[in-house]
Figure 1 (tube, rainbow, N blue to C red):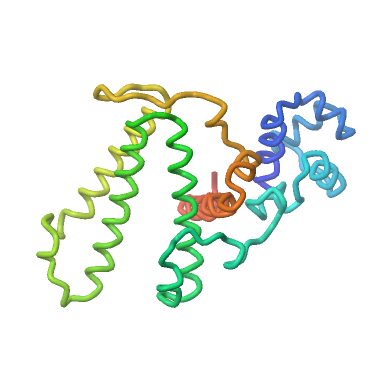
Figure 2 (spheres, helix red, strand yellow):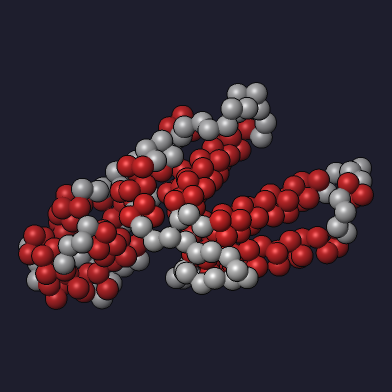
Length: 235
């Protein structure tokens, strides 16, 4: 049974504020059967997948989790807008795959910071920024250490403790960011404002960030695939 289908059809219905009863009527099935589909208790046939795709205005590939894009588009290097003004200068560094991944990351960070700004929380902005800077720091040190000629005195924190300490700092940033995002004040900081501006769906991402949404959707898909691999393919 496809694990993505129940999650996606439930998410689409709720994003569009459609009751399960109404969706079942429109899709020509009983509410009990649609409930079973959404819970993953029963597996539907191909005809229902096609009807659901037409009903929600998405592709079958999206319903089945094969594509992170509602339209089912498979993106290529040229499809992703370039946000880095120095990209042409360094286009050959690391090859096409490196350039492709850099585009995904740069565009996704732009989306992330835009969304954080809309929460009007300086605490959340601070923690998100610190987390990302620490991630870059950790990876920079990995690359730096690839050549034994590079002097570790370049850094003030000892190599033995740097990575673990940075990981701990990232965990604290993540905890503080989650607190701010969920309305919990930490150390006199503020919390995220809840408004229509911070409602996020695949549709709103595509509407508000038409040139960048593909990047963040693909980052989500690729990252969750790695997470599932760590768990033996489970949830």
